[in-house]
Length: 396
Image (tube, rainbow, N blue to C red):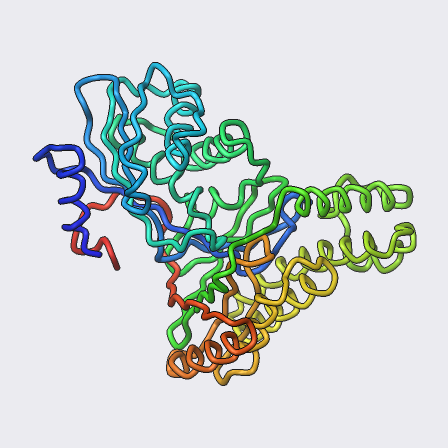
């Protein structure tokens, strides 16, 4: 897809000759630190080269019109600044509507309507945060077009509020943070409790990040997610009889080894073990990357997947098959599932001169065992949400 084609679609859809302003927000991968966010632990995400473009022009009335090239059959979604309430029929457009609503609620002046077209190249239902990408590209768009001054972390918090209060999904802040705060060739260590963060260089001169989409839609339903959260809360209640803690993120692996018997239920003990060990792996991962130890980082990725498979039990045959196949290939530094689990994507760090062999072999193994093909994406680590100033650089 060429950006000039997207501009043409904008002009045809909204019947205008105006040249729109152009914005972009990436998707994200979580390199390590899974299911630690809602336990007050650390995550280690990075923004990627795939994401969402938003093209926009101001109107001379109060109407707001949304169109997505990813869902063309849905047509143009119409709304108004006077009524930005959630409507089920608006489907995907509730995400940008929610951003406009919550930015106005935060006291920012948005006084004219807009025509906005969205185009995303993030695979649907892949767990790479397409919703956060839409939210943050809308936030940056509004910030620029209405000349607002908003600290980026405030914009990140507004995005999370849209998910929690407007959409009704009780997710953490990692997705909006990674999409909004990303930097080229930098991963980010985020303390989900304090929101303190640190960047770590991840320049992959001889390696690439391969996103492996299982093409099994994520089926981590509310029941499973809520079950894991409840199990973690029970683990905290049990451990707090012997330790002064409020969340699993407060517990070190050494403390857990000493006090794990306080958790009577074996399954709950396994859930706690994953969260506590994963949190420690995430902190260690930042330290290793600061030293340039990519091999050590890869070993932590592998250990993370095993923990998610054996202790947290959120992988499933598709993710285990694709990661297991990746581990066997030459030039692979490390591989693991990424995201909530039960489908979606895994990631691998692979030597660039082995990419073709890697994709061919993993594709063959996965299709033979699962019965359908995976999809591969070669991703680089790019900047967070921003305005596109130079059209020729838009797809770099």
